[in-house]
Image 1 (cartoon, helix red, strand yellow):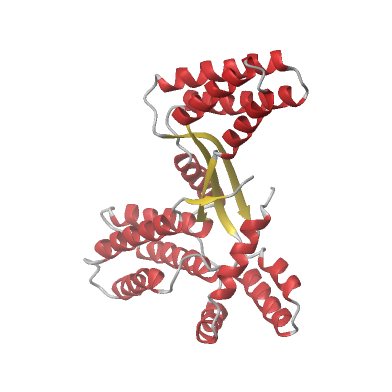
Image 2 (tube, helix red, strand yellow):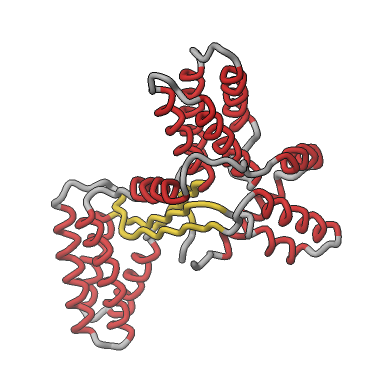
Amino acid sequence: MKIKIGYVLMFILIVLSGCDRKDEMKSKTDIEKLKKPEQTYLTENQIQAYVDKEINLAIDLGNENVIQEAASVIALSRTGISSILNENYADAIENINRAIAKAELIIRTDHPAKLISEVNIEVLDRVENAENARQIIQDVDSLMELGELQRAKNLMTKLTSELRITRESISISSYLQTLRNADKLLKEKQYEQALLDLNSLLSSVTAARSITPLPLIISQKMVLEMGKLLSEEHPDKESILTLLNNAEYQIRFSEMLGYGKAENEYQEIFNAMDEIKTELSGDKTSNVNNLVVSVEENLEQLQSDISVYKNVNTF
């Protein structure tokens, strides 16, 4: 899938800026310990089905017909621009009028001020597991020490396991007004000004991007399954522990890849998981359910904090 250069550079700078010597030493300790559990509870198909479901929920945009119409308004605007450049002014007026009609139709619907006009979904899973990531990080360290910054930068782009959603949106009311002005200018044969207005119109399309680590999505499924097992009359401790170990691995994998701003975002989750292990090793498990709920809530909050939409330049 196409990767925007600006985003990659930004990602590199963020990762590098967070790697002071203290954090690096702590990371290496954690990295060396991190290994995928041999025992699993969920099948690959179950995990994939959950990830697919979460993707569908993440891109639930409401009225798809309105979104398609908004995309059509932009497409017609672009066609109008091409017609002007080809000096086919009759076609330009026709396309702009079709865009105006669609925009007016949208205006009559219940729509937000910023209307989504296009969605781009990318699943970037470039690193299979912690062992592979560990080797990449070690190779990057070696290249940095040798001063091979470009090679290190390129290699670091492999430290990616995420769902990336980019939404383009327009302010339909101001967009419609500019279309009407352009139509008036075209009919007055002020073609250059109409072209300038339409080009500025396209530049008003804004984009926002959300990034969700795939390991966190996978860990959520495992924590939910733990809750289901705990609701049974005789919970299977061994299965719960297997799920817990696998969920912890996925969350630590996400931290290892640099998702999140600080280690304390993860620490509450790890503390609760340690308490669950202690509870499961004893006879009393009355507090396990509360601890699992705590993990689920903190995990949801962590994912929400990381996945917040941020404006980007896609043009």
